[in-house]
Structures are given as C-alpha cells and as structure tokens.
Image (cartoon, rainbow, N blue to C red; front, top):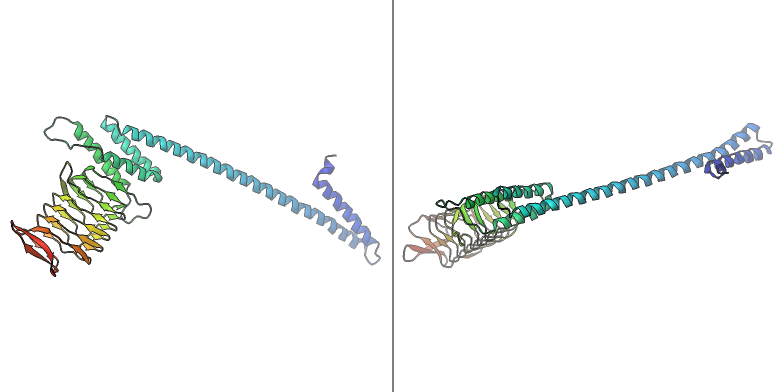
Length: 355
C-alpha cells in the first residue's frame, strides 16, 4: 500500500494513463497512423516523467540548500563560540598580567608588561587598554636611583619602567601608518630617555611630568592635543635634552610653564593648532629655525637663557610677546620683524618691530 503513496508510482500511473488515453484518442482518427498515435502518446507520457524529474531535482536542490544553510549556521555558531573562548582567555590573560604588575619581584613585573604587550599584538582591540595600563604604571610614584645608595630596588624599578616605556613606543604605529590612533596619558609620570621619534600619536598628556636624560619627539606626528604644561617643574625639576626635529602637531601644543633645563631643539617642526610657550623657561640653548606656526603663538613671559635661534619659517598673524626675555650676552637670532629692547642685569625683551 505504501508503494502507491509515493510520487514515483503516481507519476508512472499518470504516464501510462496519458499514453493510453492520447494514443487511443488519436487511433480513432483515420488520418493518424498507428505509429504517429503511439509516438504522440509516448511524448505525452514522457512529459509527465520529465515534469516529475524537474520536481525531483528542485526538491533535491531545496534540500541541499537547507543542508548548506544549516551547515553555515553551525559554522557561524562554532566561530562565535571560538571567538568567545578567545575573548575569555584574553580577558584572563589581561587580568592576570595586571595583577602581576604589583608583584614584589622586578622580573615578574617585566614579564607581566611583556604579556600585556603580547596581548595587544595578538588582539589589536586591546591596544589602547594596554597602553592605558602601561601609562598608569609609569605614573606611579618613583624616586630615581641614588648613586650613593646601597638600596638596589630603585635601580630594579628603573629597569621595569624602561621596559614599560619601550613597550609603549613599540605598540604605537609609525608616523604615516593607516589605522587606529592611540592616546597617551602620562600626567605626572617620571620618565627616562623617553623616545617617541617617528611615531603616530593621538593625544599626549605630559602635565607635571619629570623627563630625565633626554626626550625625543623628532619625526613624530600628533593628531590630538599635546599638553606638556609645567613639565619638568615637579619633584625632579629637570627636563633633559629635548629633541623635536621635524615633528607635526596637528592640534593644540601646550608647553606653558615647562622648564627646559637642557638644550631644546624644534627645528623644522610644524604647529598646526594653537601653540603656547607661555611662562616656559629655556635654561640653555633653544632652536626654532624652520618652525611653522600656523594658528597662534604665545610667548608671553617666556625666558631664554642660552643661545637662541627664533628664525621661524612662518609666523601666524597672532603672536604674543609680552615680557619675553632673553640674555643679551648670548648669540640670538630673531625674525626680521622682531627687535630687542635692552633691560638691566644683562637681559633684553623681545618686541615686535612695529611696537
């Protein structure tokens, strides 16, 4: 009984009935030969079989499509599960590494820093978070090693901090790279040989930071706001040799109140936004030759104590020179539109030629 319920049986039956019916009907016509009647009946029956074959193929196609759709969904579900597992493992690695940053042993802290950097390289979405953690570590209170002290701990901590600085630099993209741009918050940090040369940085906060030995921003491109407000005036009161050759500041550049205790060089640097050195102190040589200042330049109460080259390549319409002082006995190079007004005690004041 089940056989007669199948589409194949009904198709065979319909084909035979159609063959007999069409053939028999044509045989009643005297003008139609028997062979023509059988041929036409066969074509009619064959059409039924062909229709069944088309239906069967369509059914198989739909079954295959459903199978492929189920397989695709299964793969997507497996991929989502695998991604969730990777995220869980990454979160666990991150949490463990952050926990180890508080370990007493310096080698464990160095290992934790490298683990964080490795996580950022394998999971780029963690890069800004890892940079935030590295910067947070560098913001921790730190007293530089005393050569006369027998306590080795400050020297070990300095090694850890230098590793953190290097990893920060390594995680930043190159100056002309395409893709994400990352911010750095190093407010109040104590840094040694801090080098961002040739890197692409978003915003940079170095307020009240102490920068020792040397700082290198040469060839850097900053797309966000940069604040070195009062850097070098904290507990360290020292800002080492500052190199900033060929850098690009696309937004605000704030150096107000910054103490440059060693030579400072800004040769060929471009300032695209508002720029201020208000109340800054250049204790030694300062070089600004070839500098382009596009928006505004604030030099109010800026003090230059060494050899000074202020021959900017381009000056904005708005330049503030109120009580900008310079040592008379030093070699001084100024733009043609600026003059010196001599004061007492070997100092002179820079003024605009029109004033």
